[in-house]
Length: 251
Image 1 (cartoon, rainbow, N blue to C red):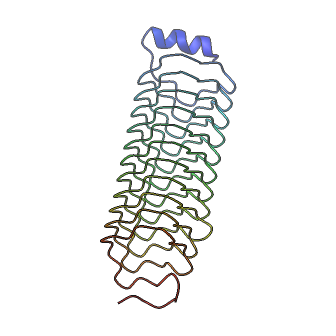
Image 2 (cartoon, rainbow, N blue to C red; image 1 turned 180 degrees about the vertical axis):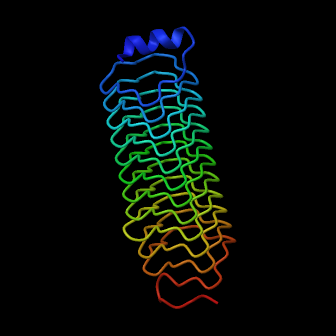
Image 3 (cartoon, rainbow, N blue to C red; image 1 turned 135 degrees about the vertical axis):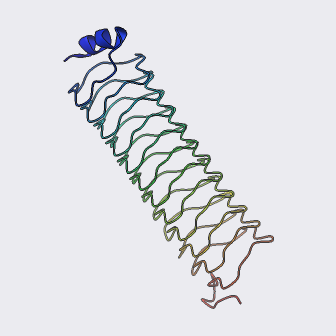
C-alpha cells in the first residue's frame, strides 16, 4: 500500500491500517483523525502539519520521521519508536506515550501537557521551551535532555532520571521530584522549584544557583557539593537534608 491508496481508503471510511509499511511516505498536511496505524512502519515519513488526533499509534515506528507542527492530541503512542523524530511545535497534549522511545527526538516548543510519559525514554531529547504542564514522567529517562526554559509545572517526575540534564530556567514549581536523580552536572540554574516535592532527591553537585526553592520539600534530599549560591529557600522544608557545604545533616 502507498500513501495515496491509504488516503483513498480513509476517505471512504476505512480506519484500520495496522502494520502497514509506509517508510518514507509523504503524508504532510493530511487529516487522519482516529486512524489505526498500530504496528505500522512510517520511519522517515513526512507528516508535517498532519492531524493524527485520537489515532491508535501503539508500537508504530516513526524513527526519523518529520512531524513538524503535527497534531497528535489524545493519540495512543504507547511503545512507539519516535527516536530521532522531528516533533518541533507538535501538539501531543493528553497523548499516551507509555514506554515510548523518544531518544534524541526534537521536541522543541512541543505541547506535552497532561501527556502520559510513564517510563518513556527521553534521553538526549531536545525539549527546549516544551510545555510539560501536568505531564506524567514517572520513571522516565531524561538523562542528557535539554529542558531549557521548559514548563514542568505540576509534572510527576517521581523516580525520573535527570542526570546531566539541562534545566536552566525551567519551571518545576509544584512538580513531584520524589527520589529523582538530578546529580552533577545537572543544571538547575535559575530554575523555579517553588513548592516542588523533592523528598529524597539526589542533587549531588547539582547547579542550583539563583534557583527558586520557596516552600519546596527537601526532606532527606542529597545536596552535598550542590551550588545553592543566590538561591531562594524561603519556607523550604529542609529536615534531614545533607548540607551542601559541610556534608553534615541538617536536623
